[in-house]
Image 1: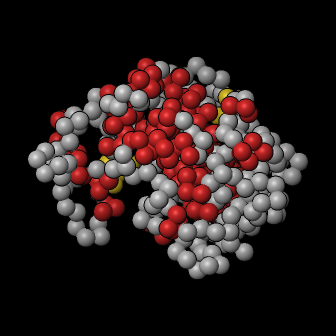
Image 2 (image 1 turned 90 degrees about the horizontal axis):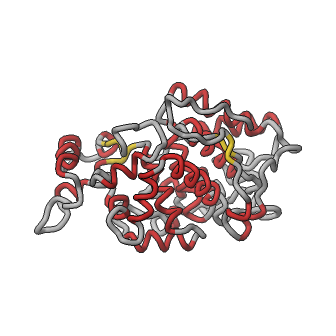
Image 3 (image 1 turned 60 degrees about the horizontal axis):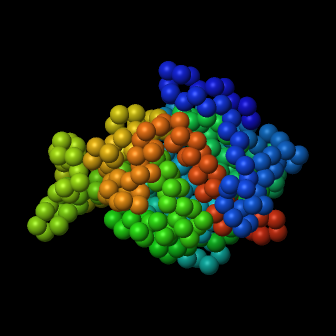
Length: 338
């Protein structure tokens, strides 16, 4: 899909509008069965349909990109990019991924996927997986947030299972030790650099205050405030996030990851980390740990270099534990396992 060049007034990128990456650089295992242009004969309009729907919704909701990126990440990291996060129920009757603590009421963008799927089913029934639709939608989110358009390999199939119990053990939290996060990524074929690069998605979107208030009020018994926080920034956060939120009101108290360019995917995230202005403790640790600090500094030094690596890492993440060929199914309704 050909994309116009991003306006120079929006970004400092000098990349071409379409980034094409060598397949041998991406992932391992069944992920190598994915192909660019997978639907060229079976459903040639699918990527255009995805682009049109996401762009139209984005016009009404400029904060859609981080929602779609989060959906994609939370899907891929739990048990692979299989659209299990979209299911409303399964044959086992177990609580689903959507019902987990990490997802719950915070997932957004589900209705966008529903609309895309409905249009795609009209165009080419029982052909395009929900997993591929989610991957294409994430690509559009990246593009609409300011990075170049790029090709996404497809051929994923859908899972019929989804368990809330799989979520918490597979997703890092703001308090997860950095070494554990590195190991989580490694088990999925992603490197330490991939981890740091993908954290740049935190240049857009928001976090609930509950994700970081311990850094403001309860860091340790002896040191209530995290000393790695920039003092001025810590005061700003404390002004937006009280030590205690009213019961059931946590969703009302949120803060932008990056107040400088909150709607643009760029390397400002790393510049913030260098200044002690990382919102999440897990992010800020990347700027101080000797194993990741050089990568943070590299990303902070070049918006262009980070953009290229981010796209590469997103494609690589999209290959995690995929179902292909005769594995899985093509769900005609992304919420239903039948």
